Image (cartoon, rainbow, N blue to C red; front, side):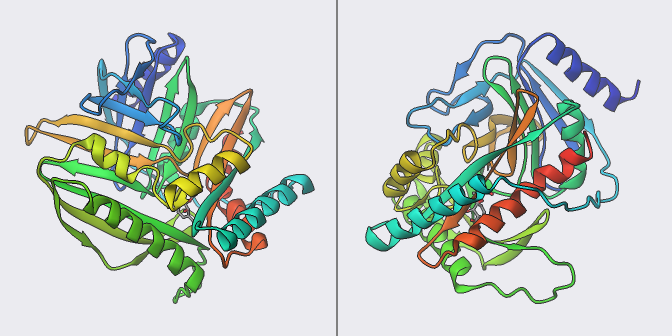
Length: 362
Ligand SMILES: C=C(O[C@H]1C=CC=C(C(=O)O)[C@@H]1O)C(=O)O
């Protein structure tokens, strides 16, 4: 058996034993890592000084972030094949689903016009029937199709099974520096278009995220030299986003303080945070669970440099596998200038990220 076959064989046998694990690949990296826990204990993160793989929900105030212990660590390399040119396809939606999402968006716009709320991120979940349910095959396809994303397959027998390919970094910390990202605004990617015309709505949406992140970080003692990069356009599968990198130096600030300041960012919740959170919990009418939470390596050891590092990503473009279905989670940022029809289309475009891959598996 090749090294890669041994890697997947060990993962399959861990799944067979009903034990928790995660496999993942960092953006632009061909390494696939595995973290396997040897018992099925559900471990909650207490103060973010722990080491392991963290999987945190959207609502960290009421739900726990889960830690996988690094009992076994695996590594393999996987040359990505040529970019999988997967076909887009038209989904057929029940008219109630469309109506409900547009209604939610209209409620959000109304609240923005009538209250202090400036931006709210509204989402939905849609089921996709799976005939063949092989999450490892889905993971391999995601890894091959989205080389610039953080791709993962996370499983805990007592919690559930999630997969995703997210373009958004929440926090990277190594030695005395940190970086995060302001990602917002969405347009469909069209390879024939050389110049991308971002509208005022998208620019404003992204600026709200940048300003809120910077003003939150500014208040944390022990963080300094905060810099914001130029805004750039990035491609994430079939869509484009506006992105700025935000970085700085970290002296004594704790990870817990930084994460409390960052999560949930206005890219997944809104601004001001409290008003947006309240609106989401009262109006979305479904449970986000780990969608728009975050995940990744927490206080892991870099053996080459003998330092600790943390690399966390926002859980976007993701799905949960249950009841022979993939539940795909999608949302978008709403501001006063949002158009409910376009917001619906945006969620449809985002759902293609997962569906294109699933269609090749079933
Ligand atoms: C909430 C999602 O995306 C966020 C991240 C980037 C762009 C977004 C937007 O344009 O609305 C969202 O803020 C999602 O993909 O489900």
